[in-house]
Image 1 (tube, helix red, strand yellow):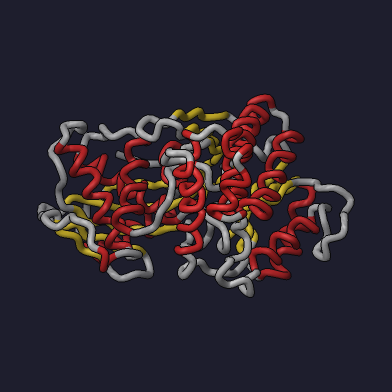
Image 2: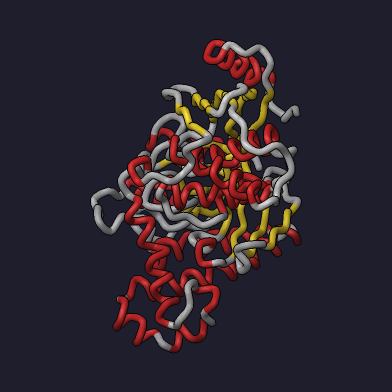
Length: 408
């Protein structure tokens, strides 16, 4: 097959692949990073999300090797080798690239065994990967990597018979069971499906998806992923607590996820929830309900071309992440507040509240959390006429390359 990949990337992939593996014949494929437009921490409770794939991608050159081994080399990293005869999860491998590779292979093996895929079954291959979706960039480098692996395996072994959402679910399971990080389906699904997509995850086995034709640049705005300069390698427990808190609220009402609990039931039982679980889980539950509604309304606004309403909803999402979801400053490490400082700077640059908390002249765009929170990047939606000054000011404060301008 032939994926749309720039010629300079193909040349780099080809040269690196031949140096690593020696094979002359190879194929190429890619998978994009993603940006969450609205729907912060709603997917794991089977809520609604508006997301988009972006033009920063992970790329691979790959070829079958005639063995039962899978060899993966990512640029700048050591090689990982997986035997197709050893695909069970291993707690000692949690957090490793090897675990993700093994998890994606295992997911395809299970689907093929259940006779849900065409093809010959798993076979060994070599792959060399180059990624523009940097780790910690907030654009879900792990999901892009999982979808990239899924596309290689689907193409090479299964005649392309796995759908984009099936590839996404395999990637999510790999991250949950093999990598050891709890996550919903949004990251993988946005990367796998592509474009601007509205998701309703009420049915986790068959989530509803709707692609929306919308060009932010034609509407006069740029999407900017702003890196705050803080890493998230040691914050898995902070992430895990968010779905746990929401799940704990659902279980008070005899359900597994908040989607199964009517919002009014939680609201009218606020005293009971806060007495048993505390204020934070209650507020996180309320965020879930309100954020799901915002995602749906934002999708409608984009379909209508109503950018004013979309920006209002995006800013409301950012405020809710700060005040209800509380995923800006780590509770366990309140001194690690780089994300908070950077987001306040962006708001001030776009004319909202100033860094000292005083009122500005009115927001000209939007600023909201992107992804898990606590570190990484946040999303700024910036009018094109403001972009040069915004990017210059951000990078003067946060460093060169800290403001990544994205295309969907």
